[in-house]
Length: 99
Image (spheres, rainbow, N blue to C red):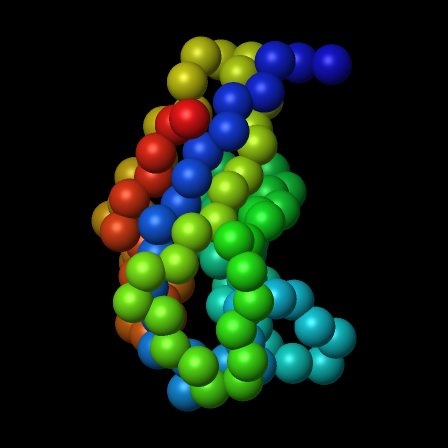
């Protein structure tokens, strides 16, 4: 198995249009949209883990998720502008921190 690097993702979102953070069947969630945007940008499947959960319609000014990515080609680089361009305006990634 390849070496893994963990990254914290700091984000904020206005939850009005979402059924909370955590992926659910038949409902749009923040985690679902973040995973899709990361997968598109990195051209590989990405699954995040959130620091907690929020209910339908709840906003978050500071929320953290993490993702583990293989280090096959050196450190994972992330273009925040590119990532945020793939997300709805109601979700904003503030920082990605290698830990």
